[in-house]
Amino acid sequence: MSDYPPIYARHLVKRYGDLVAVNDIELKAPAGSCLGLLGPNGAGKTTTIEVLEGLLVPDAGELRVLGLTWNDNGREIRERIGVQLQETRLPDKLSPFETLRLFRSFYKQGHDPDEILDTVGLTEKRNVRSVNLSGGQRQRLALGCALVSRPEVLFLDEPTTGLDPQGRRRVWEIVEAFQEQGGTVLLTTHYMDEAERLADDLVILDHGKVIASGSPREIIRSLGAEGIISFALADGVDSLDYSTLPGVLSVRHDTDRVELTVRESHETVPALLDLLRARDLQLAQLNTHPPTLEDVFVSLTGRYLRDE
Image 1 (cartoon, helix red, strand yellow):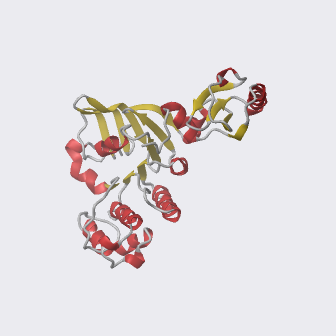
Image 2 (image 1 turned 45 degrees about the vertical axis):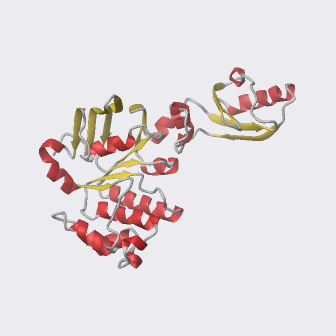
Image 3 (image 1 turned 90 degrees about the vertical axis):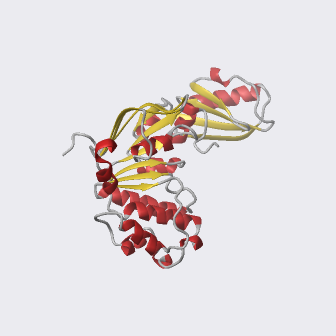
């Protein structure tokens, strides 16, 4: 049995000329866990997962999948992992059954294609040409191709993009069932609710570097805040200095609202109302909520996860 977890990377570096896309990152995912990678576009998520999948060669660092290295054990690793790329082009004229049968033929062992069709909810589309499937159905077929070999490690790069809510929930259930059977997952996603539901641990990347890591709860707690106050003024965003209000940890101005990260909402809200009243400013909207993963992400990166 290997001393390494199924997914392991240390001091991983990947460069494109002068651009350091992955800059000295470390990742560990124990058996049966899901490790989530979050970050704005261009943060290095896809490059990281493609290095782990053996599609790209790292420039530095140690990398092991199932305790094995790509240089010495590439064929064995491929037999034991499943990969869903961010965008998968499958043969247009093959049906889902034919596509899965083709992918199954690449491996020594695997699932029956009809079993996978049932798992990903495509049994009724068994004999329909792939070109006639919807985008969401093709996405689920790509996931089926990743699962057909009975993998021990599953790499999922934004697996629910383009899926409706029902399709997303089905994918979540598939991933959770895979973990319950001892499988290990590395997931990139643009959806905070997906990250919070599926990931046991998260790594947040920005400009190729790890800027936060831990469980979703630990990362939220790292903000050191009890609440978020979000408000909009009737006349638009003003130039008042809200950082002097009691309990305010940080202030963020968006195009049409202000967000205050605070230690105690009950201390800050009355002071905020007094300040606005003294300046004869009218509130158009006021909301308070506990900190979320999205709030921490914005605080760390200055961007929302789905910012383009």
